[in-house]
Length: 332
Image (cartoon, rainbow, N blue to C red; front, side, top):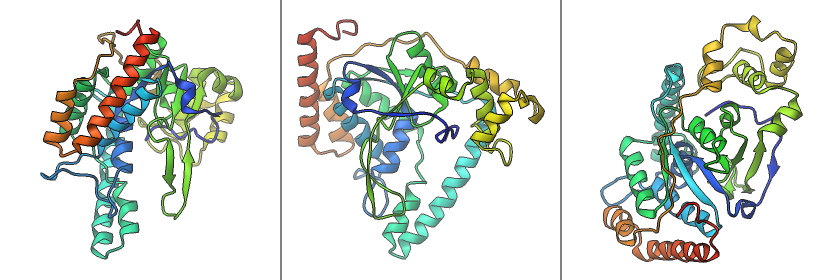
């Protein structure tokens, strides 16, 4: 969910080709939830194999990653670790929302209202532990690196970029900027034609680049002040924020030096300024293991062998061309 700063944060629309040659630290949970939400059957149910196991996340992860490599983008997936205690209320609220949506989905499907069913089904997405495990196994077989954060994935992704081990962070949420990411790209994992929820309308979703320096200069705020604005609006650590305060009002309050009048938030500020991160990771891209990929996707999850083989061929071709150009010597 993250903090809602969309209306005040300057964004620059870019083409995915603008990221060619860049390594991108991707918020893995955020991406997987997007795949689970978007990749659905007509009645709103997720893709499943013959055993009834959900496969939407694997479909999105495989084919989108193939597209990245083909575009010359080098993805590094960063998974969440243990969530901070202050996030407990947000996690519980998300469970409640999903349960309510699940009930409405079942009701709509029983009535044969597939349009309504699909709308609610997208709100029921739940990332189980086994889904995370098989996502990591798939990435390993593809030769794509991933990192497990000790806590928040976005914080770890921001740290990896700050260290110079990746060029940019990627997430749908704006929290990356609060965690110190110099730059953030949104819509990377969902770019393309997308249906507007509740309407028979499709729009082009394109990547958006957000640069921390541009944000702070445009708003005339320091990073700590931007964190204060986010807290007043509401974050995952204080959902709902302060009643009646939106982003613009929050900026006025912070600039006037009145943030402290609304409560004691030192612990939340510290979570953003000094998040739990780790140096215990290794980023290296390897050649995909065809047999292992086919075993996971086709043998275990019933994917089309022909389509998967074509995806592998596209990856191999792109990697071979890149190696010839010697643009990724630092990774191999």
